[in-house]
Length: 407
Image 1 (cartoon, rainbow, N blue to C red):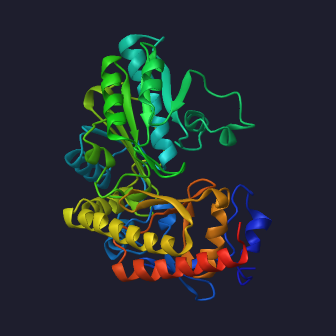
Image 2 (cartoon, helix red, strand yellow; image 1 turned 180 degrees about the vertical axis):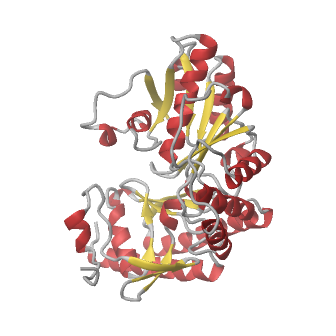
């Protein structure tokens, strides 16, 4: 039985059909390259959806994982462990935070943040201050609470009844927030850059206005930095580039470089509302994840690496503009650092996924950010020569798709 081949067909036979994975199965990765079962090589501009910020099989992450694996894997939250304490101390040293809660995914970190916001409000202001304001379109995870806060009907249809006391206003619309926020609002949650919804950056004055309104109404400001954190924008966390400090910050994806781990960061005063027994997770803060994340954060917080991200952003934009001069395919190129969105012209709207298949056929992995936007989120340390080679493959994919399937 163990000698039977492992093929893509096994997904359709044994797994829940909530994904539609590509036909290939990667079996090995190194840096910004992957190889599939047939030995074919791919350049990775997807980064596991902005997760493998240090590339595949980074030697320092591998060393941290294997060293910890020989010592201690799991003790649960009835005991603490050294890697968790070291990582928490490091994150507090590098950010505004004074307290850290560890979980396993971005959705869990956001769930914790939203629960904490309501608990803090209940503790300090009473039960009527429980409204959460979020922005459309946004994405905060797939738990029932976070998917409701995300506010996209396509992710909530069929899962009702949904949690109440959640209000949505348009992203980057400060006037709409001003009209919506009140003494009943316990928190406002925002992505500094809409990751899944088009790679759209918040305007600096919008985030500054959020900070002022939250302070005025005694509401907590939550930054969802699941995708924008850990060096992705060229800052360790995007809030640093905006100069706007949240009350709570959530981080995941690149935090573990591919190992599942997330964190919620906040102040000591706010954290006090999550008293003993009020929230928890069996695997959160496990020694393996925290050891890998500590190694990752040590690397990602290097100013030279962060400067390199900003440099590589410009290389990508220059290459994409050159491609666009030939094909006039993109109506906008946007994003920060190595989170880049390429919005298709109107004639190609709704067809972003066509480019995933075309790029894959050329040996390149890319992402989408909605039906109209191609998203690039490569490793933050991708070499310049691989940027160029990947863009060459992207251009060939575009040329072939345009010739075969003109709108």
